[in-house]
Image 1: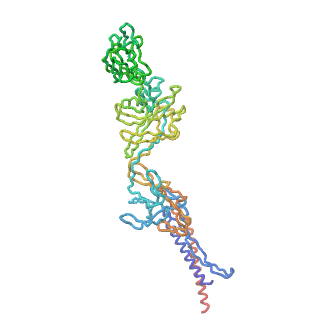
Image 2 (image 1 turned 135 degrees about the vertical axis):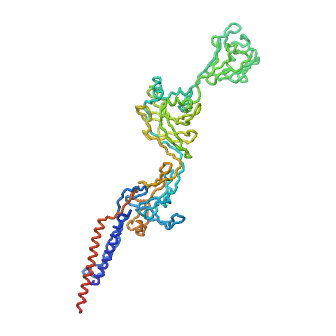
Image 3 (image 1 turned 120 degrees about the vertical axis):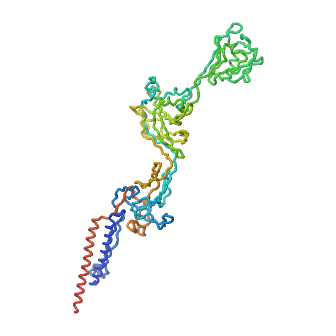
Length: 602
């Protein structure tokens, strides 16, 4: 090692410090660059070989770049909805176009990586950052929200159209009053269901059609009687009185009962169709028995009491005599052809309120809110809801707080047309106002149809405790929630990226729908990535291949700033300047020594 070696070492020192100065200069220049990761300088000494340790001398120096990619920059909020930042480990997957074809960028399929998240939507619907890198991610099914694959692709949102989605579920929450106040309740008979704020089924017809599934009332026998009559022997008529012994003997003809003919002739009496009663030996009792067979009367047999004939309908059919050419009924004391109609009976409750009963229904029920749902064509359907209390514990033992829910199926119904439809479920609450039935948090409204618009089966869902019956001073239902999951077709208006890394589209139908999922990648050797223009990086052999997924999280409407610390860079600048000056002093000193050596030979 000599003077000339010292000169060479000093030159190496100047080169190393120049390299450091270049890095410092770049770091300071990019102090405000989004996502920029500074480059530090590390120095390595170059020791010449020496045979013995005591002959070892200080060597030269070389400089190396030292990446700080893993160092987090400060994350700050942004007013741009598509700006994103990463908190922690990870990179955005991006690609840079290699050209343009038909005004559309073309890509070579090479993925780069960046933390510069200042993405904005360009004219073609791509998310591009200020350095020209196009964001990648995985598209999401707009209906299900499920990813469409797991391989990131360049994202584009251009004139996205979302088809209509039919309503399949309504989320509902409400408190029903312990004592409903209806139009009819203040003036109703005390102690009645109407006075308790409920709905009196008897006000809607004998069949109780309003409450779905209400058992039909049983039919009640009806009867018709004739005046007291005498036979030819001045004895009162009995069932054994021969037809030939009536004041005017029955010698022929027929009668028609409920459309079935009974013939009078001198042939033998028959007990099965075609019916015939012998005019010579037949009795009044034979006639009554035949009539009961025709009507199907098995519970209240037609009879004669104190000479008065009583014809019963029984429970199966009404009684109507339309023809009597024999004159027998006049002989039995009937001034007109006998006719009687049963009372009660009918079908089970249908759960329907017809147009004629709308006023009564409105007066005995309370509003349950309204919601606009959509059918498969995206047509909006306005669903009006009403609650009716059908039983109240205030009526005494054996009664429970029971409600029925109705929806308006035809807003212009008249006469016998259906106006309101019962959902078909008894909602029962205990004395604490807690719903005890139905269990399971929901019911199904079958084939929901309003004003001819068919929606189909819709689930009415309510969370635990969402449907209750607590005291209310107003006596009305308090609606906490009534939402649904359908919507009309819509056109994409704008996009934003949320904190879950989801690209959310806002559509013209008012819906916010997930369109894509931003994916992150990470590397085993992050600081060995190759830096590219525009704060991007490429994988190297030392960094290893990209690994899908990262521990970092995405922050929406945010940007990660440069990790450059200006104060630190200025400090390094001073040190580098001093070191550079010192190396120049070594060169000056070595030059003086060489000059002194040369002067020796003069």
